[in-house]
Length: 300
Picture (tube, rainbow, N blue to C red):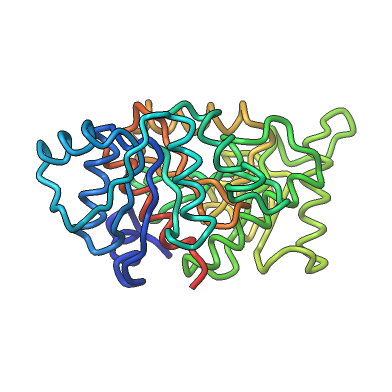
């Protein structure tokens, strides 16, 4: 169990230092995160982008020169391709988005010749530290797949379960979310949730304890399950929430951050190596935690 981001960072430190490749690195917040991961002993960095701007920012934030290698490339799209290629060729282990639009970044990350494409479905895994909760919780997929089919939800689950296993979370408890716990032909989400739970029972998913359909209140509060007369083995102790659509995941995640004061980290799964796709507006702390999360998700 990972209790909080401090615990996660300590776990990442214990795995040894790797290398991150930052696409379009001329951004103070991402460079502050790079400084933090280097000082924490998690990763060194290769920075791809405008060398003069990068060097100026490095001087301002006091990042040691031996922490980084800079590849000078002023063209944003080419810088992203170079950064992705470094990971594809094994010269770096994690691809990190810098000051570049997400669509341009992903285009480079998935380039057929220079990127990290595997043929698998890409999916987003979000990690939340929620005030008052005893452990970190994970949500998928609120960032990549808009309205996934049953087959795609299965792939999303497999991506996430493999990542959690690498993080040391064995047989995670999984809630397949819907508006209620009753299977209803008029609510396709409940049919998918039932079928995914059946796949888990048949052993067609990586080891997990999965229930669905299940509403959010039951998933997070054992008292709600008891009050509703629902026999649940995961209520109040869920590790991974599978949301039905990108809108649901986006709204739940932003509500946790904006109203509950949660901290969030996230990464993209399904590529050759983990991809840290953070918003340009995210803080250095969020980017730092996301890179630490990606370190734990790496194959050992």
